[in-house]
Length: 404
View 1 (tube, rainbow, N blue to C red):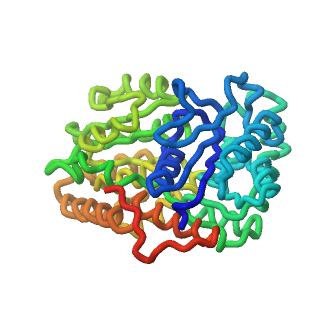
View 2: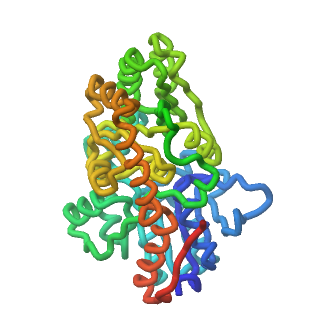
View 3: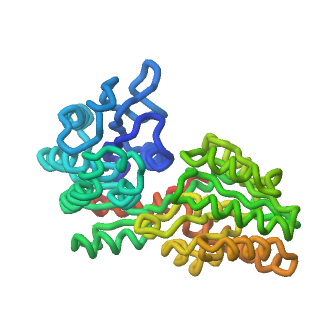
């Protein structure tokens, strides 16, 4: 069984880790796997363990020396050391920038290697401002397209790849002729237990719209704010909550402060994961107005499944994965979020008394989809079976992973 195996997860991030890294590694530990993480920096105090997980890290190198790029000798040395000390049966590497080194070392030690590819990383890099400012970096990323070359080489070295949606699977199979049987979707879904203390569904008179997450240009929140203000002039009892942080946070606050609806637009700022349940209990509707580009069309935000798990009807953009899931689960409405008038009209429709029964059905459909399919409990159970086949170890038919 997989629970008898040792798994090493390698991430370019530092501790504390992002929610996907924590979910995967903690879940392996919970089923009995000996689990370790190799990360860039570990800020633990006096211990090389975190929640029962062994931690390897590069140490206190300068940011330049510890850059997660291919053939960095400090990373290669740390990978070799973690493999030598921990002796994993399986290595999972997060995304592409370390994947070549990990694959080469894994193959030399006859260890299967899997990539956890949560997004189209080359496209994401070209969208970040830090890869546009410096001439050399801009030339490497935008003109030479070095990340694309790294991705291609990395993908073809993997024994399997974990993705977050069907659209990414189709891209990898089409672009690199990668064997589709080696692709496995692990959605960015939440654990069921996270919603035990959450007020699910809507108020009898729903009025609170909310977005949470990064605040940057690709989230399209400026248009959302203007649209909300238009809707507020029709229904001045509605409220918009924006929880999160990012490079455009102060800019959006200035815009909102000049609108008639400013008192009904609330910025909550940065929040810890454990605080999200308070937001879900307060809100009635989730909004995901993301701009459409190659990145958004090949990933699916964890917020989509969070809103689903809380039974909140959603307004989403026309991103391919969200259109598909809205059609499948009936828990959201996809609209053109570049059209401010259309966003405003949809907000008004969502708080119209005549649409209340339809929204209740959407809420119930969301909760049913979460219960039956789109939760971390289900995703991890499917992941265990997939990795078990990769390692030629079978799980009993009655195996289930449920954190409820």
